[in-house]
Length: 112
Image 1 (tube, rainbow, N blue to C red):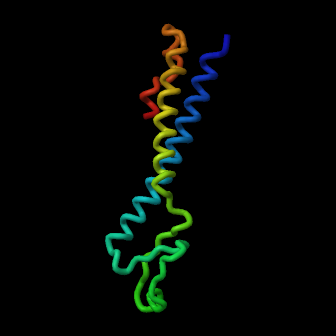
Image 2 (cartoon, rainbow, N blue to C red; image 1 turned 90 degrees about the vertical axis):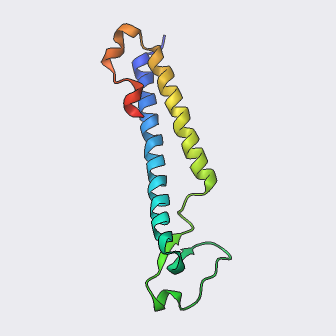
Image 3 (cartoon, rainbow, N blue to C red; image 1 turned 30 degrees about the vertical axis):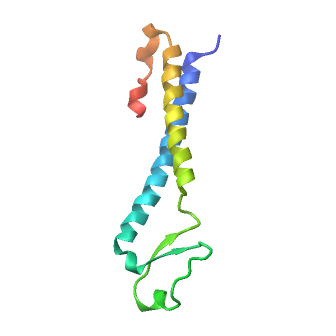
């Protein structure tokens, strides 16, 4: 029989990692959205075919979004799906702990 507490701790570590990844993506997207409020002076670097006027960076402050580090919609989708899967695994791991021993760990909802 496997150790349900060890399995739960593994699931806690996983949901924390997934939450950190989602928070990182949120921060990048939020910052890009803030830059796009002044979209007339914004540009994206590192995107093939996205040409901006040569003097754009010298004539006014340019707001730059990195096309090489910004997440794609697919990356955002995978990150969110990973978090939801980790949430489900955390709940399942919690259910494997005998009911009379669950008070020894924080409930899954603590990590949501």
